[in-house]
Image (cartoon, rainbow, N blue to C red; front, side, top):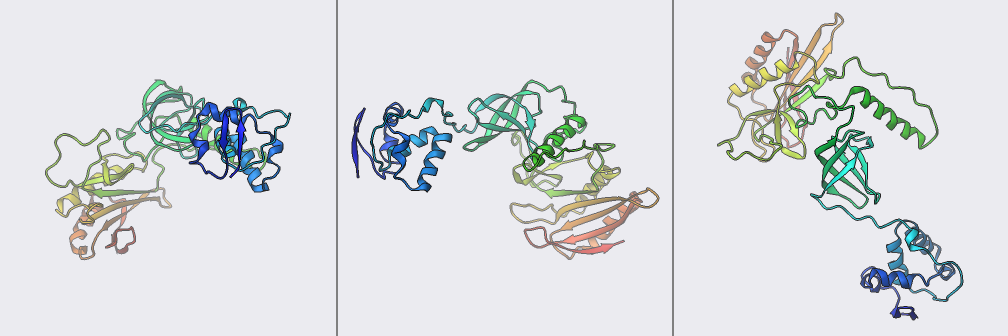
Length: 366
């Protein structure tokens, strides 16, 4: 343990760690003591420790101060220029959950969130944030150098914002940008691809060839049965007496709840009509929907696949996933009703699983 008398008085140094003397000193006192250290005074340290100290000085000045003061160093004074702490970047403060900030969205991240940056350098990923808009966002998840937030209100909307055509948007997360112009979506995607190639070499990226229609392009849709309805604004005051029978999409960040859908513009016609009829027919069987929390129930998933034959006619495959196997005779009338109502259905399958996962076996009905 060494000691020296700095300009603020006697200070004991040594391997005190982050919880030692360096943490106990006030910010101003640590700054004054730190000004006495010079670069030549670090010559006696190993190369690995020198690299660590230089990194701290460049990126985290406050950490560098505390780390140097808590180490055993030779403390000789020289006339070289002192390290200017004020020129180093300020320490980023972690945003607390529930804090609301007003930010400008500059671009889209590869994961689909809008990107905003605070004056401190903190990056915020905003759900449903459109580039060119100014929004008030509420933080729901925070890290050391970035945070995640959701839009509370729009101060200035983007010129590329449009009205969505689906009544389930944005509660259903099947579509992320239904309220953003398709041309703006392609522009942001083009920028993301350019940035990926620019990391390795300056390669020109050709313009994106857009789809003829941004809707009805999916050839497979998987819907989930459930007993707990998802309410985006919180549970209602009057809850249902028993379990519900719901068919729709999995709720965001709520693995045991389901968003009930009666229309979906991602799948071709007559996908929506098949979805609604399948819900009515399965409900009439009086068999319960599967509860992911209790792991009880019968109906688990409804899978629809779409394809065009050589004549350009739509063909549909229906797959009903259940939780146990001895139900073929009960489900066969249901399959016959589906086929009689929609001649485009060319096959109906019954998949079964007794596990908590998605592994299952299949029986085929034509």
